[in-house]
Image (tube, rainbow, N blue to C red; front, side, top):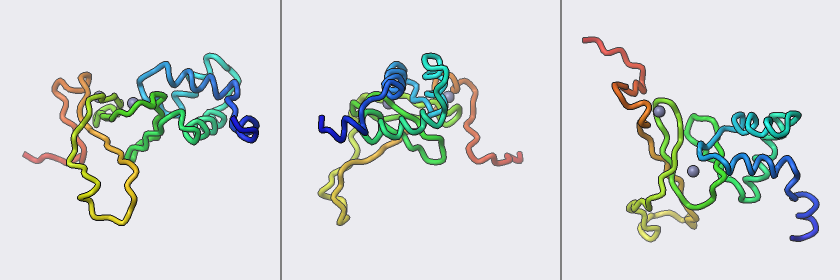
Length: 144
Ligand SMILES: [Zn+2]
Ligand SMILES: [Zn+2]
């Protein structure tokens, strides 16, 4: 590791704990949830420290940030390629490990961008939310 990296980007103890906690779960916690997990081991850690360290870990490529439309950022300590499915009722996020074949052939997409990847978020209703639950996404009054 290069000198400047050692100095600025070394895994501090706090950062190491945050990474370990994040890797110990598959729940894709929010920063606040990571904070509560880390706090069990480091009672004096602050929420701000957790936010900062999560940012650095993401920059270092050690954690994945799940930016889901109109939802809080969530974090994933598992860097293996996989997809996510979000429950539209309770908001939990689970992993999907099957390779999904989209009609995604970069040759056929007309853009001057150099395509380096894509984000795919599936939505659905998790097992706990399924029985008798109607996802009332639009809060529409159903008259009649
Ligand atoms: Zn659910
Ligand atoms: Zn995941």
